[in-house]
Length: 435
Ligand SMILES: Cc1cc2nc3c(=O)[nH]c(=O)nc-3n(C[C@H](O)[C@H](O)[C@H](O)COP(=O)(O)OP(=O)(O)OC[C@H]3O[C@@H](n4cnc5c(N)ncnc54)[C@H](O)[C@@H]3O)c2cc1C
Image (cartoon, rainbow, N blue to C red):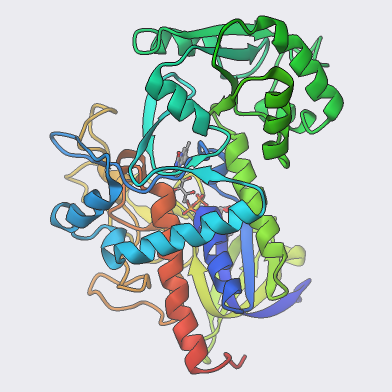
């Protein structure tokens, strides 16, 4: 078999969701030559908010306002959760490094030392730790129940201001809605948030939007839109609209695909592209792996005559769960797709799911995943490290039901940080990996 291209690297990161992007970010900061593989992750589905930890599922659900307090007692309740391999200081450092890098590129996040309440596209509230700055005024507006006008658009898929208001009405009576035509979309029966966000990059469209909204504002102190105020220059776009309309503006998350999730991915990619030791191979999935006698791992991307290969000294598996493609379920078992690693999973008699979707204990299948050692290397059923140079990070890890516990981004970023630290230590000891 001849390959279209063959590349050698010190670290190959498989998966470019929050975990993979973070791993690549921490690695290139250390000067480690890194190749990032795989397409977008589930983050383009995510709200854009970064969860740290807010909920312990169980017969009784425990909600934590203070995620750091929750982290302190987590080992008592979930002794195998991925966070138990991390010190709170490491988690804090990891998050801050990512947030500061995003801020330098114009994607700001806001938050407090505790979790805050964020309104969702359904009009429910979600506890989270760090909120895109475009949503931050909404946290305060909701907290104070301030008069607010929510503007949405005819034809916008999966977002309804009236629905949201009806859900929120009892708690927030001072929210009012108006529905208008989005500029330059007459004749379109269906509108998509990502497309509208792109079109707001044009000043002409912004002017038209401001002109349509201005007469609708009464005495409201806040103006809300679905999260589509620009893709690449959202900070400037929101500031310009605030100036034109004279009122603080905030975004409310939409259903997937999520513009704030895409902003995160785009900005992280932009940061990574600034490093000369960074390369990306997107578009093809890792279809085959092979371990050389030297210990290097050979990753084959794609199939047939268009396949290529990456030979790497270290590999980071950040392939996510079922949605990302890292785990697959057949009627008998849950499998890890790339390396066929052992997956901790419910035994057949336990059942994968509770009967009630909203069961407060959560579902066993959501805790299935890879068991790892203290530096995030997958281990087998005896607890032995499978490969010295293979790490696994993010939502593929076992014992972390990110959906219930609200710990998705936190686990992804912090596990990536710790795994890269381990690689970096080896890297420094050897000065530079000899390939
Ligand atoms: C609807 C939804 C809403 C969410 N909301 C939030 C939220 O508000 N806050 C929060 O903190 N978290 C949220 N999350 C969770 C969060 O998105 C994930 O926890 C986080 O993205 C970490 O995921 P990951 O990077 O481990 O995996 P993923 O994001 O799933 O990425 C997996 C990556 O691996 C790649 N891949 C898989 N197999 C292969 C292969 N064989 N070869 C190459 N590449 C491969 C995929 O293409 C993808 O790039 C949400 C998730 C969803 C689905």
